[in-house]
Amino acid sequence: MVWPGAAESTGPVVWPLLALLLYATFTLGTRNSFIVLPFALSLPPGWEVVAIVVVTQSLVESFGMVFYVWFVPRRLFPDVAPP
Image 1 (cartoon, one colour):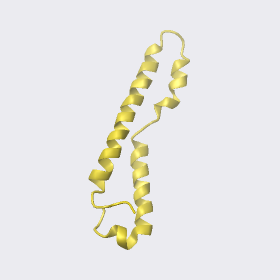
Image 2 (image 1 turned 180 degrees about the vertical axis):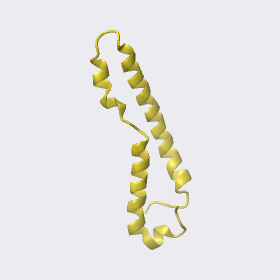
Image 3 (image 1 turned 90 degrees about the horizontal axis):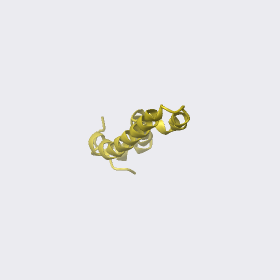
C-alpha cells in the first residue's frame, strides 16, 4: 500500500490520504460507550449490571485504542516517516 519514496515525491498528496486512513481506522475501532453511561446510570434499581457492562466496554475500547496506536503505525506503515 505504501511505496518507497512516497513522502518525498508526493508528500502533499499522500499525507492527507494517510491521515484519513488512520482516522477511519481509529474511528471504526471504538463506539464511545461513555455517551450511553448517563443513560445506564439513570435506569431504575435492579439494572446496575448495565452500568458495569458499559464501563467494562469502555475499558476494553480504551485498551484497544492503545493497541491501535502501537500497531497501526508499526505494521501498516513501516516505511513511512511523518513529515
